[in-house]
Length: 452
Image (cartoon, rainbow, N blue to C red; front, side, top):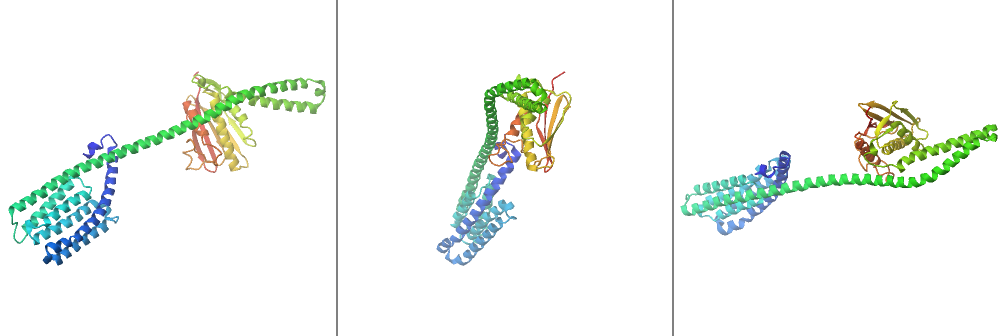
């Protein structure tokens, strides 16, 4: 029955969990049942007094002894040693009242004794109090029948009225069969309830995973919306900035041809510095255009571009954060790769910005970032390493999770690395991280190279 009901689930593990839950239920019911039996056994003194006052003294002693033994079993169930054996101990305290009542039947009226009713009530009460299966209940019923037979057999007058004896025996046997049937359906109900709880728990787990996935998607969408808004804003600003920059460069170039400038070394040097500054602005404007005019799509994400150029763009856009930081580049001669250049620049900016923050926190005398690339199996691999604070071992497995951040509240959403991981994954690559806490951190990823 158990196997049939739990089929379709991970049966071995589910069966273990069901038995654990049933064990706890048995402990709780057994404790309550012990107290209930102790109370009923002691209250039976009133019945003894009204029916058999001549036996009151030793009947009272028997009731106290039965209640005391039941209390000892209860105390044993409450211990660590007793809890694993709660099933056996439960049937032990269930047997005590039946043995007591059987003895009372033997010393009173045998098959005609009214205590037969008490035996039957104790049997039904035990069946209702204890969550047992049908075989256990049937065994308890047969034990009760045996006790009744022995009680009548050892009565000084023998079995006595055969008809009364047979009737009582049939009633006890019917009670055992009915109790076993009721236990079967009760066990069936418990199994169905547990299977339903397992199903609900599984669905809750799936729902939590779905919610986590939705939260990740939502976070990435928020980040993309911000980038799209930045691109729209940049598109307008860049046009306005680029025109005056071009005019200024034209004016500076014309001024450099003037005879007065040619004859003045200081003036010429100032104009050359101004031209270099304008050219730097022009380069930054050009890099920002990559974000302002990017065209997402499958075709755009498979364009050939130079990774070295993307690295230089990212370095220029993070130059303020990387001031006073030594950046070492070790790239192969051919850095042609396939992919979405704007998205890859975004990944590089994120990695460089995180490295800059780690270097600020570490306060190194010689802050340094190394970027090295090499060809591996038809792909170009790039690593970005800094000598900053490193990542704690307990956090190394979580840094790529969405919304995970070690920064102060409000200092970041914890989405940068998660979005970068998604971008590299979209390029059929892997964004990996390794670190030694207090020494260094290295992020690496790989991109496809065009087929020759």
